[in-house]
Length: 131
Image (cartoon, rainbow, N blue to C red; front, top):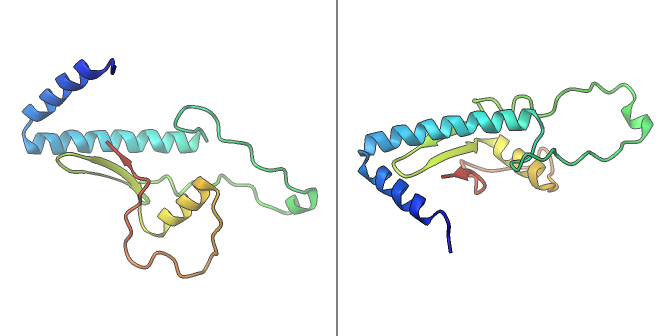
């Protein structure tokens, strides 16, 4: 049995009592807060559960020579690429544009061919956080 059923019912009743404009405002606030949390989480290199990301593979010593070490994806987590949007019944945080494909490749450890024709047109990310 679901222990949260009474809480869910009460919350659904409160949300249903709101006007559509108030629901949109609430969803927008939730989306902005969620985006800020995701940006902080990406910066601290932690998974959604709070565990640190898996360590990267060790690189050969000669591969490290002359390399500039910078924080990865510093721009990826900015508001320019990580968009928060809301409607009457949803709050969405997603990556936009070509960055969407790159984030997906890195998140799931996929292989990609840089420079190949990618994502012709606008594609909605199937992995967006939805409430």
